[in-house]
Image (cartoon, rainbow, N blue to C red; front, side, top):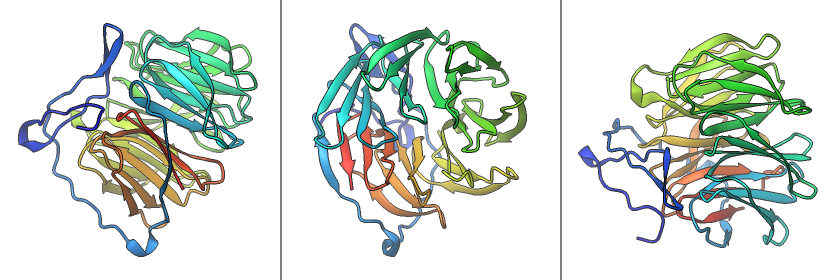
Length: 348
């Protein structure tokens, strides 16, 4: 075994990898939940449409799992986070660490740059949000955001607000003013943990996905639920991740059952329901043009999809453990993958 986590087999020869972590002494471990998976089909790859993709750099191994990665809007720096609560700031010219930020007491679950790039927000299992000035990367604020793990965070397109979701007992989302960092709205309605949230590019709605297997669409003028999108009702169909197309033409979500669902954000009609992986889909993102969509799964496979026909155009299995996070730089010529095998890979 080359590093990361050794995974026991579950009944039926398949396995779950539970994404909730527990602290044991000074270390974080992944708890493994043995539950049989649905048998899912694998879509064929279309070789003629495969983009050129190669690893150009593997960043120095991390002490623990690499949990999140994000490019700055300028593309000049990249940030990554680890299960030990640290955040690394990298130069995208030299790929050297410019700064290492140690502030969270538990693993970092989400990172988001403001649209102008002047702020970085980090959320953690320690229930705090941290606000960082990206000129100096000094900590500007430490906010006790939720009663438990912060699972997701996203800035509004105008940068005036941001939204967070949590795995706490309130089962809510919070909308924050980025001027005062006070809560402007609390959004209730989910009946289980909130896993993901995203603003539509025009700022008109926010979507949130949950362990209750639903997507809620919130109108940002009224902060009321305007639509509820039901995935499936069985417990193995929790929504894990979501992403809007850069032009707002699609909303894509990934589920515990290995499927991805594509909706039309104008009519909210379901356009596609694809059995994408044979394990849970834990991260998804578009490139800057929206032509390529990426999903990563706890089966250690990352897939690149064409958004023109929703076919797989490339598969990546270079990591020895699953990829927690993927991100494209602003020009789309670089992709980064952060993995539980303690490595961060750069792709061109």
